[in-house]
Amino acid sequence: MMRQPYTVSIAMRYLRARAHTAFISFISTVSMLGIALAVAVLIVVMAVINGFETELERRILSVSPDARLFGYDGRGEAPVDDWRALRDAALARDDVLAAAPFVEGPGMVFVDDEVLGVTVRGVDPELDTGVSSIYEHLASGNYQALTENNAIVIGSSLAGALGVAVGDEVILVLPEARSRGGAVMGRLKAFDVAGIFDVGMQEFDRGLVLVSFDIATKLYRTDGRASGISLRVNDVYEASTIVTEFGQSMLNRFGGGYIPEDWSFRHQNIFRSIELTKPMLFIMLSLVIVIAAFNIVSTLYMVVREKRGDIAILRSIGSTPRDILNVFIVQGSSIGFIGMLGGLLLGLGLVASLGTIVGWVESWFTIDLLAADVYLIGDLPTEARVGEIASTCLFAFALAVLATLYPAFRASRQPPAEALRHE
Image (tube, rainbow, N blue to C red; front, side, top):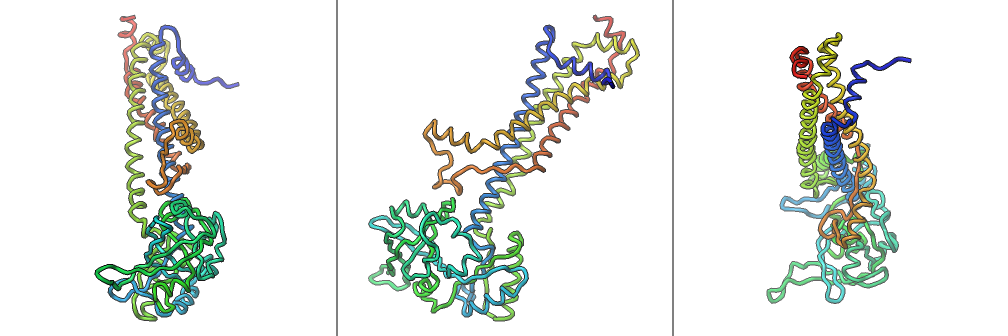
């Protein structure tokens, strides 16, 4: 059975606490804990950012199509004259999986004295299921009931604010360009709530209502024309390129104008801020690991001073400067490795139970840490990515190894005779 090198045995012995080296062992423990906490915090923070980004994408795509093409008349958005031809042209492309027309505009919904502004979207439920999965988030009611002229599907937060359920009546108010006596007039239509969806994003659950495509063309007086068409593409991350190319090709074919919009367009500021925040947070939290690694320098420096006699004896019995160097590199690296491993386990444990922990804190202190009416998402999703975790752990361990070099080098250069004279 092979025995480990004596340098490793000595390094492991120096790690264990003894009565006369209790303080040094305490400093070593503090160094391990510092690296562990720094690694764990970095893993948790990056997992929360990743989870928020992924969940935001998922919820947006569950309500919004991958891309949309609006009509344009040179001054602004305008109805598309022949949306059927436009849809057929879209379906002829290999990178488009489904297409559906829509009519969209502003409006207000009120019940009794409660009035809320919303976005009204007219859809064909048969075609819309190909480009949107909002029907999968229906909490109650029937999505296919949108084929009826007086049916409306609303979000859960909107239903709660208005105090309505499936089967209740709401009044939809649409803006009217004409005015009487200096007051802007509105057009009113009563709808029966046919369904209530719950996406989990306040922007949609409170601010979006769906009606049938035919009734929307009448309400917004588009004469059967659509505001544009929605697309489902084969690669959501290429949606912007696909819809832009498609819009340009339709401009050459049909004339007029088109405004392309992909799924991230209306939330581009959020996604850009996430892209900027992630590297900045990684750098800032990495500095915590750097500070924790400096504790290893002070720990080893104290060990070197305390072990001057041991070093001198090792040198006198034939140990080379490289052997002494290895002793303290192994000791410091072990501190870093144990701290890194502890931080990895702690970080993964916190990531797995973070939602439960937040729930406990909210229940104990009766507070809402993630209020749905303040944040885009009312829960705390997490997503631990292997590449980022590996980078964090390797970075922490590499810093720990680098932190050992200076005190280990000083120990290897220590004259044995000088050390024995002071013992």
